[in-house]
Length: 507
Image (cartoon, rainbow, N blue to C red; front, side, top):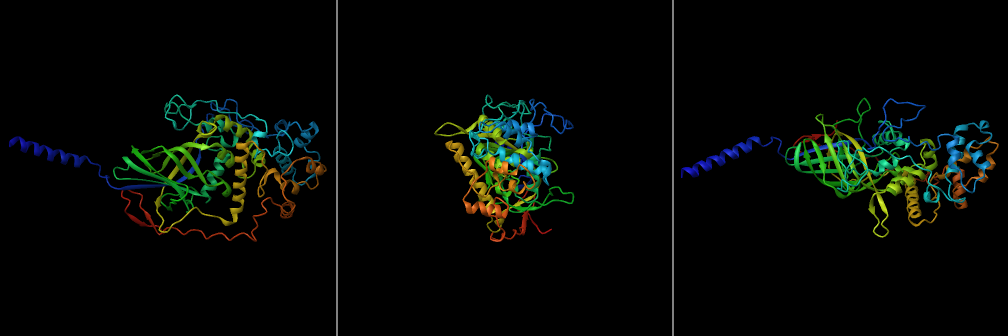
């Protein structure tokens, strides 16, 4: 009897002690974030302050330097050595005769180069960027360093070209190896395309939000849930122009959305690896914004003491999609010349380094391991009271249609190795931009008759030349009127331990 009382008293004491040490925050909790920056997690191995005639230091990551395609007339001339071109034609393109007689010589030369480099196949008439396999590989400087930020996506330390900064072996980040030395993606926080993409995202192109929830301690919960997705609400900035904290954003659960199991340890959130991770795509124009489909995807998020977060999104992405997104946001020649990158070289680099998603029929690797870096600010991520979807800008839908058409042509071309033409509605080959910039050039007729360009039905070509733009379907007179901007949600979940607390969203 005495022994039973002692056992009972011990059990009560143990239960009381367990209750005392149980975290006070052990209750339903939720944390929300709005993504402030979103970019490839490329590592920069050079010195931040290095300058040499505007170049970026080779550094430990790119011992052979960064890409310098089309940086000057010599680089451009070297890219134009196709069998069908005479030496006179090559030299005339590189240094157009009479250029000093036109009103805008730099722009005119830019457009001549654009049209010329858009046709570099084995014979005349083959458009380069839709059919990159039909041109010779110009060569792309690739990453030589062995350290990368990313994930061991295949759970095999013996594969993968990199070691993590924490010493983890087998980091799979083949996109970094392929594109890490491409000029516009390289820099120490100042890569031009990263800056452009973040500027457009923060300016309202799209919004990405993250919500984490659980039932234990927000800093230590082994059974949490992470949601990532698109929001129709534009990012709010503070008076300094930075992404502001603690504003409300609705989350769309029908598109560009994924719900994942996760665990939180010491404020670090690590999700499970899922077959498909859908989230908004890195973009800087409406036409190529959309769904980034990561295969075998996962997320790691480190939440700081100030409530801000930084982390990684990784997985295998279809490398043809990556090529399309980078090449056809405008047109291949235009971006190539401006950014000193050659998309043909980037195509071959992607194909050469592809390391995942094998085609079940051919065995060809269709995916390339990729990691994106994000920073995020605390926000109230709420479910909308009424169903919402991805915002549609009616005036831009026809341009998006042209992008989708050229993406389909690229996929068909690279899959079948059958040459495809350029769908109408794009600006490939600087058409009709070149026609508008040749006034006063003595050699105008030579370039118009010698250089290839996209060709369409006579009615379409006449409309293009009359309107002075390639996208003849993007006419504000007959375009549907855009839908009104979505209104802000009336309620928001307070960003604290208990998700049931509601605050007024109207500030």
